[in-house]
Image (cartoon, rainbow, N blue to C red):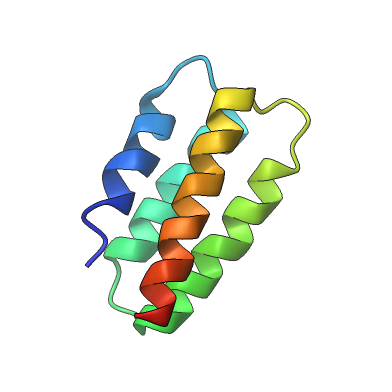
Length: 80
């Protein structure tokens, strides 16, 4: 279900140039998406968390763009 999204989150989580708090949020998002909750709850929780990440002033621009892409994929998955 989230086979496109999890590798993108893992790429950010493994990138040592990204601040630790942002990498931690991505790791949490992966755990949520792999968890057993309702699909809509998982998507909404991760979107909310990633939205907060994009407002972090320390996030690199390329990472912010990746996060926006992930949010777009999640929103498309939510509508499907």
